[in-house]
Image (cartoon, rainbow over all chains, first blue to last red; front, side, top):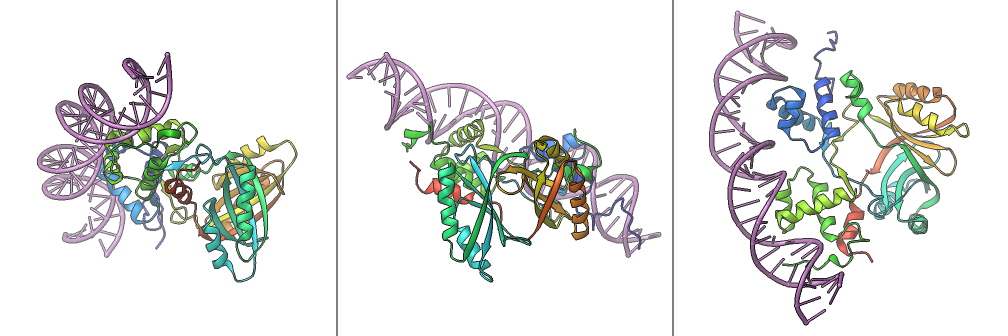
Length: 169
Length: 169
DNA sequence: TGATTCACTATACAAACTGTCCAGCAAAAT
DNA sequence: ATTTTGCTGGACAGTTTGTATAGTGAATCA
């Protein structure tokens, strides 16, 4: 059977309408289902069904509040590559997870074993956090880079826009 | 029942009630104001006022939809350190921003000039994306690490819980 | 100290939204 | 040819929101 890409929702997790809906919600997340249906020019039930399906497919996992850590006092973001003792990843990750300032940890290929993002209130505070990290058992080496600016903030928009097929509003 | 916590709200961007509210919304983002007030045991107007203030202070910047890129077909996440020609950061960032798979770019201290997160559909696709990146004018060198797993997914919770626990000095 | 301000509580009411139905239709699948 | 699937348009009750108002205690001002 040849894949006919027009209405393949089975292997196409997000079609154009989905993308338009998600873009709309990206721009104005607090819109209700009704308002979305109006803006998209479809029936309310359709929007409701689309959202349900997106959640089912685990494409849309929720609408978490977006917090500006800077405004909360954590003005400093840093990235760190962690080298650890062989075979101790689970333990180390547990230790790292216990540090509130550790906002994200990934295991990666390449130099270093773990990669993480941490925040701090100031340079002095970063020092303290880094010390904490280094104190986690089996952490061998830590190489830290401070984020000076963020030219491209976290985004998904372009990927959605590509699905949608049409450029921004 | 009167809360006498307001001795320091000028320099304390987020007090305990704010933190509890944000935690609640973190766990169940689609809760309405009314439901929040019930769960927190305060009046609806209070929740409304708190939310308004958090938005005013730019602590709470919105409720963007959380998308699972993996479920959307982008199963691969990679981090890359970019070395660029001196003084060309703006141009390079512009070029990077034009690549949809580039989800985030930071300028950092330390080895490399830019640090970014990119996604791809597969290894072959990653190759394509990387080629795109390298083709951006003034990009000198690109060092890529693939994320194998994410032991600690992006989170803010622990920072909020700390505020909730005890109002920091 | 008395007056004022501020945050919160407690209500109230109209307008709007949500969760759920259901029937009709057209295109795609079997 | 028949069934399935997704969308439309409409309807209903119940709930939530936006917005106001009045009252209370605590902190701040003059």
